Image (cartoon, rainbow, N blue to C red; front, side, top):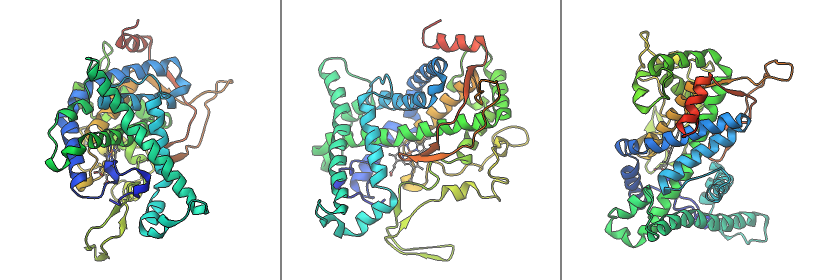
Length: 412
Ligand code: HEM
């Protein structure tokens, strides 16, 4: 990975750390907190937040982007700090959102390359136009400090008050840290925790917005997924994690969603080669930047015939079970593979299956009752790509579905 310019105060972020001892320790903490097994213990909280999300969608459906953002933030904040996010305007959440924005603006691959490859820029006085970078760096450093310190202080204050939270930060404080890093343990934990938010919130909400768009544009797929859920789950309860293996069509819809429009069309985290290599007869020198082109991978006609079509069946066998090897490395690969993949996958599944089970997502209608057509547009916001606001209608599938939603949060 390309090390970030130290002036920005972003060297706490696992995704931006170069390969080395500090990165290894970060990954060790991630592996403890987010292994496949440990991730299962967060299913309860994920389910709880999704049920609240369904209520929010029912109350103000046109605010769906806000509800999606709140859900993603609420899951991550609950798991990481044991903190309850009421809305996306929560101060902890807005600070992180602002930091993500700064990181994206400053550390686009191009600027990262410039800042790291041309050290001369580090000496530009602040009154020159290039000095804007220095101003932004100071802003980023201050904000990063707030994002690192404030939520961890919340966890510590709760512990002192005798009402400790159940959270990853709490667990990590209990963990033995490598001797050479013991003195900077607090700082390391703050870094890992803030990375969880930076890496986890936006990716999850982008995945869900792409899913909603795919459902608006492909009503026949939505109906087929709902029929599968009705057969397996019935209408006496909402879906549970235990249903997952019996819902292969839903699984195929989710795989197809992120193939149809990958969250990271061109991976925003640029890698740098540590040694020279030869690949397919091409010489790749040491120290060059390498980006994964997920867009090209997911548009490969040989692997995915008619790649722009949304077709979950391409991930199923003739008998309707999940086919092998149709997925692409959506979570990356090798030693930098996404350490939050199990938790991200769980959040995406439970939110999508719960929406399918209870709500009908369709095109919005105008006053004359005609469907509103639109051309989807995507933007790279933060670290992930997602659709720009699109008109849609979100309604309960039946009075029974609405009852189940309200009952899931203790209402009637
Ligand atoms: C649908 C959800 C998600 C997707 C599609 C996704 C995808 C990715 C991808 C493609 C990478 C880059 C791998 C590379 O550089 O080769 C990555 C890195 C990373 N992700 Fe995720 N991610 C998701 C959710 C999460 C969550 C929930 C967390 C936190 C709990 C997380 C934490 C990270 C971190 C820390 C890295 C940097 C790893 C490193 O450089 O060592 N991600 N993710």
